[in-house]
Length: 266
Image (cartoon, rainbow, N blue to C red; front, side):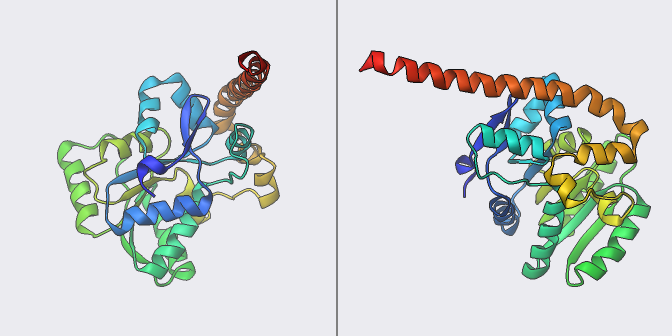
C-alpha cells in the first residue's frame, strides 16, 4: 500500500491512520524492507490535544507517515465517524509485534531513548522473549539538546548499524519532533513509542486487558503515578471529550440536513 492509499480520519482536527492493526504493521515492514526513512506517531488523547493547542506540533502529526490510534477513546471516536471495524494500534502491541516479525524476517532493530538501566533490562528480556532478534544497537541519549556534532554522530551510528526499524522512546512531544527533524536522515522506519521501553522492561505495570478495553488505562496509570499525571489528564481528557462530542454532533447534524435536502433536489 502506498502512502497516498493510507486512509485517514480527522480526529479532533488531526488525521489518524484508519488501518487495522495488522495493516499498519504490514505497512511498516513494507517500508523497512527498503530502508525508507519514515516516521510513525502513536497517538493518544494527550498527543491529539497537544496538536490541537499547538499548530506547529499539529504540522508534525500531519507530516507523519502513520498516526496510529493508541487508546480506546480514539478508537471509539473513529468508529462513530465511520470506521466501524477500527481496532486499537497501541505502542506496546506494536513493539511486541514488530519484534516478533523482525525476528522471523531477520530485520535489524535499533532502540533509542530511555535510560541506560532500562535498556539493560530490555536487552535481558528481549534475549528471553525474542532470542533470534537482531539488535542493531541501543542508545540512551543525554536528557538535553544534542550538539550538532553529537547529533551527526548519533545519525551515523544508527545508519551504520544497518537498522531497518528504530524505536524512539523520548516522550511526547519530544520524540515526534525528533523523528520529523531526522526524517530523510535516518535510513529506517522510526517508531515513537513513549513509555513502552519502561513498560516492557518491567519498570511500570501495564493495565490488565479488560481495563484497556474499557478505556480506563488512563485511570490505571493515574493511580500508579498520580503526582506526575494528574495535571496532564485533568487538562487533556475533558477538552478532548468536548471536542469529540462536538465533532460527532456536527456529523450527525450534517447527515440529517443532507437527508432533508435530498427530496428538494429530486
